[in-house]
Length: 275
Ligand code: GLN
Image 1 (cartoon, rainbow, N blue to C red):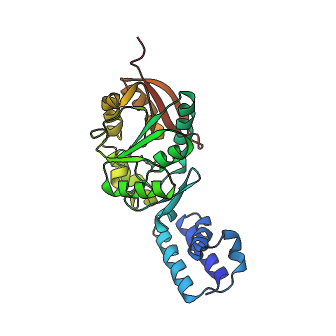
Image 2 (image 1 turned 90 degrees about the horizontal axis):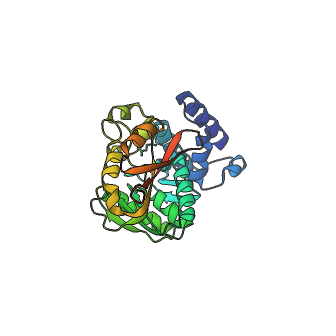
Image 3 (image 1 turned 180 degrees about the vertical axis):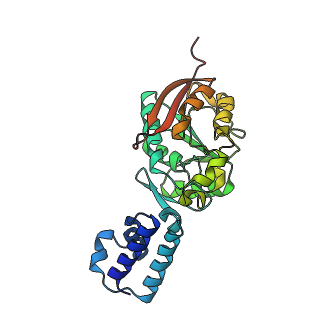
């Protein structure tokens, strides 16, 4: 098949379905394993190439995100393997990394725990950019398997622990970071298809109010923090006040918006050092 026709056709179909038309070239280039800038240089596709591209275009038309089609994602300049057992890394979460790196430097933080690690993207991005001891935990064995693969892929050393929140975590850390599931159960079916059909519900569902996992962190994190310990948590835009009010065991430090201007990250520190 002629590539130009296929590109035009795919873009038109994506447009009608409200899918970003840029995804068409992205999918074609990724399938052919060439840079996007080289697409105009290709005229005819082999039947095998055509078949593969059409398969991926159809997956995207069914709202499968490109990260899940190609089973990989980029986050904080690093490459990760992805599958349907973990949340695809979001660009929005990169601000959590920026914030964590700022406090790690400022407070000479030596040990970090990433709770609900999923693909491992937060833990790996931090470890890659800071000289700290890192542990990462998740309740899902499948997620941990993938996170371990990602740590190897990015050449970092992280200790992974299977744990329901902090129940199996023994050590104390200077910092705990987490992007827990935070979508209220009744709002999951309002999420875009890309998320609700292809990200695991386990990684999204934060219970009736969406705040279940923040409550657990407020109730239990003290046992795994040093006296000057900190928490850096991702939140949903509307959850800022509820989470700050809930965190009775901690002192609120700051709320950091993401690059889209939405409330995204909350920073707390343990109150204990103060009288
Ligand atoms: N930010 C994700 C979304 O909006 C949710 C991530 C989470 O629950 N931790 O789909």
